[in-house]
Image 1 (tube, rainbow, N blue to C red):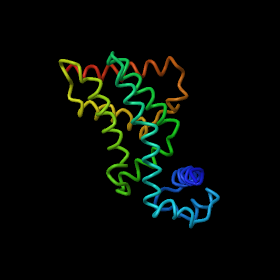
Image 2 (cartoon, rainbow, N blue to C red):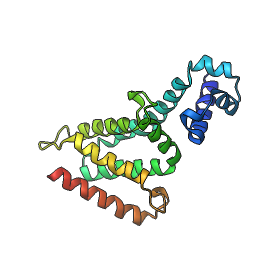
Image 3 (cartoon, helix red, strand yellow):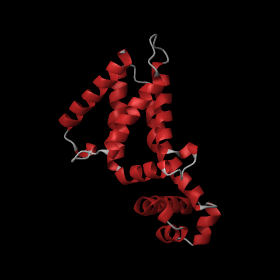
Length: 189
């Protein structure tokens, strides 16, 4: 039974990326998943429910878990570098999905708990709160999450000629150093 659900979720991701939420039909998703449309409706009562499940699964697996793991890094520079490198890699490798989620969020098609920018911000803030919990001088983690989110979203909306994940290691390191230095300046202010 679980593989049918996974088939539907994987197919839904493909179709939603290709066509967006509004243009996608459940019939197209069922066809892509190689299941009857009635099977899709047994698993997910509405297209909205399916879309939100897909988004939640993708974001929880890809974002929240890793940020919490990185938050345990004792050195702030290493913590910020790991978050930025991991997220920039994921966003540049999954650019179409990320842009679809961003567009659907801005158009109001997503519930608050699966709103892409909100999830990015909240996940970052939670990780930052954990990381800075033992620090005597704590930065404003809400504003810092905004700064990091801005870096991530700007790389999505204003991409360079070469996607981040394809950059040579030296170029990635230079870019990450610039970002981390600007974040450290913000933290110190």
